[in-house]
Structure formats: C-alpha cells, structure tokens
Image (cartoon, rainbow over all chains, first blue to last red; front, side, top):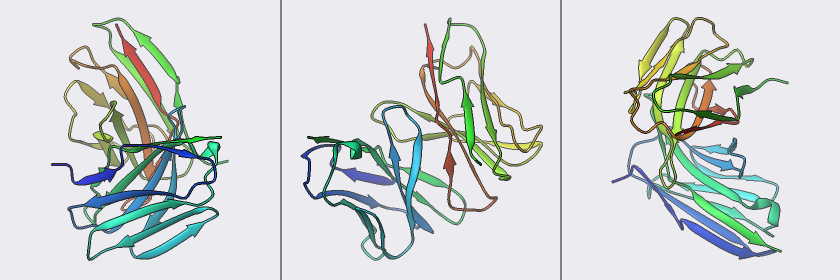
Length: 108
Length: 112
C-alpha cells in the first residue's frame, strides 16, 4: 500500500471549471507538499502546508491533519494549468513520500 | 538566479555502458537528492547526501553510485548493473533538515 494516495489519477476539465484533486496519506507528517510537473518534466513546488489552508492566485490547498487528507483546488481552470499534480509528505526524519500524481488536462 | 540545473535533458546510451547524470545547485543547500520517476509510480529515492563527502542509499540504490566532492554538485552514475535504467531522473536539494525541496528540470535517460 502506498503511503500517499491521490485521486483521481486522470482528470479532464473544460476551461473555467473548478477542479479538485485529493490526497490521503497514512504516515505521520511534518508537512504536505503539492507539486506541479509540466510535460517537460521539471517539478515546481506549489504549496507546503502543515495545517489549514493556503491560497496562491487561483490555487487553494487545504489540509485536515486529523483526517490525514489534503485537497488542491483550481478555480477558473485554464489550459495552461494542464500538468501532473503530485502530493508529497515529509516527516521529521526527512523521509519523503510521493503520490503517483494526477494528470490534469484542461480543454479550451 | 538561484536554482538547480541538470544536464543533459535527454540522454541515450547503449546497454552495458555506464552513464553519469549531472546535478548542480547554487542555492547553498547542504542536502541533495536523486529520484527516479517511472510511469504510474511516485518518485523513488535513489541516493541522498546531507553534507559534502557523505551520502546515503535510498530505497532503490542498487545499480547506481554517487559522489559529493563539492557542496554544489551531486552527480549520479547509472552503472551497467542497473537492470532497468530507462527512466526520468530528478535531482533535488534542500536546506539540511529542511522540509521544502527544490527540484531540477530532470534528465530523461533511454538505454537501448
């Protein structure tokens, strides 16, 4: 069983739609990360959070520590949001666990 | 601009040859990491280094070797002993003990 599970694996949306990607984890964590990987392969860190909610532009990340669950929301989605979104968790032992990613395609 | 560079972006090799992937960072980070990414799988840790001249095996170190002679550089050698070397390789760095990792652009290695 993977320590980090993401859903859905693949997601197709129309431009302008509200998108939610979910992440559940089974280990104790110090922080949860949402990463974005574009088709070229490079990874960008979107959020690092350990409680509550963070917002950056059209992206919102929430975490519920008790339920071991996080969500990444994209409001007013745009084709340039098309990418793979990866949830990762890190613990105090500096171990990192990665989800398998959610591949998002936003159609104009 | 500070960041991590990996070169080359694409690399092709014949089976049986060793190949070295470059990773350089100018973020003054102590810790550096190598991950492998395969389709449908999460990133898996190959090796990591928390300080110069020291490194530790990750979850899938067999068939790989690394060195850390300089703080800025953490090259990864994929040896002929690695049974399935074709993959996407990502280098990352962080402040020692830090939770935020910074990733390089990756190198896609194809071995035929």
